[in-house]
Length: 146
Image (tube, rainbow, N blue to C red; front, side, top):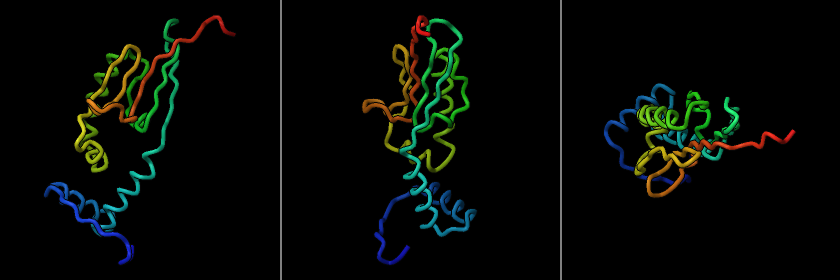
């Protein structure tokens, strides 16, 4: 960082400022260095999309596609019924929102919830659309194909 870099004034709650100060000390960084490092980490990982394909046990819905920025974050059994996965995701999101500054910042000014459609789940900002954090889609495969 140099004096030529842009400066930005921000307001933080006392709790958040205290948390960042603790993390900066733990990571041997200045307060500015800690904030910059965390923002850079978010910037470099926000466009990564991870994809998983799950083979479902029944003959009817044979493949489940799991993708999004948080696809590998949750240790959930993705072979369960979508309604059970939805319950697990809602619990996981509650914990995630409390877990780290990065995840708390991601939820600011958002009404984050799990949307269940006919054959898919999506983590959305209610009223605005998908956050592309995690999307789970069931796909039917024609069993006649070799």
